[in-house]
Image 1: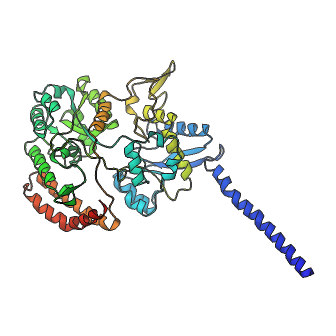
Image 2 (image 1 turned 90 degrees about the vertical axis):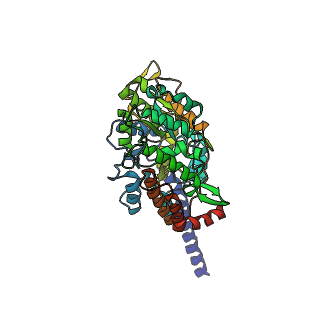
Length: 486
């Protein structure tokens, strides 16, 4: 009996200890949750990597301080550290460096190369964070919502990324063909404008190594209305269609007549922009909103007020729209490292930058540097045009009622209006991993043939040879897959 009592007593003591331990273990996550945003004495460190954002560049130290102070007012004590990107092309080297562990930011901006990383579980699903947000979800556009539903790893709060054609107003207004283009922007009327511009500049059209900016103007006119289209009863990529052939023939004519920059294949974005600002070229396409606004401000600085930009419509033909907007995923944006120990704090930075206070920082810059407060008004100064958003490019959520000055030029605002007016949704799918190498090989084949056709190295008749090689390289196999999902 005594033995039983002793055993019972020992068991009771053991259970009491286990219960106390369990109570401690239950409380631990709650205690940890309280500290995910740090303390004044011990703030949480969040590392941030973004293209063209360097720790000591003008305005960035002040931005970091303002973000930290704004979050501290909310009881979130975060130390934000901007990291230097590895040397080389950002979109190429950053994904490689991230996958290999060379870099491990908590917040990381991608401009491509993220899909394989997400497939490997290296990026955080942001769905729950967005659903629980106050400000991020309030400034999302419909295209953002659709893209995040399809691919919840990259968040990019910006207008739909569409390339809008612009031209110097002083030159455009001097052309006899300009009125006809505005009234009826057919490829033929565009051609007339380009031919007339040849007397004013060396290259009427310039671009940055690819024809993507031209495609935004001319795709729909020639019937290239989506990434994937139905031709002869089956789903195929539009790059291998008769409509694409007709479009490339038009580009080849532009090149042959000296209307398209002969050096476009080797031009980068900076040399393209330099040619535009210096007057070597007259017509270029830029992303709706911020980029068009930058182009406008710089062309006015270099060529005078009369050179402010005119926004041009997409060419009109079989259809009329700028490039179709793909919402299978964001093509760029911020992700959160799946191995980050401070995911909540990292998202808190994104959420703060979507708040009213964050929108002022992101879109107006730093008080005393880019604007001054005078009689309760935010007065934009001469340095305002040097500022650009380090997080969210959208104007959504920005209260400009107390702002004196031009937040965005008429050309910039006009490009946003045009993007909405000539909007078209894309048809596309995210391919499974086993088909991605095939698609990569097909795209390289397209680049080779399209570039040669445009530059006159190959005749347009070689497009049929390209289609045969495209199908053999994977087009036929991928079309069979597309039939199962579309």
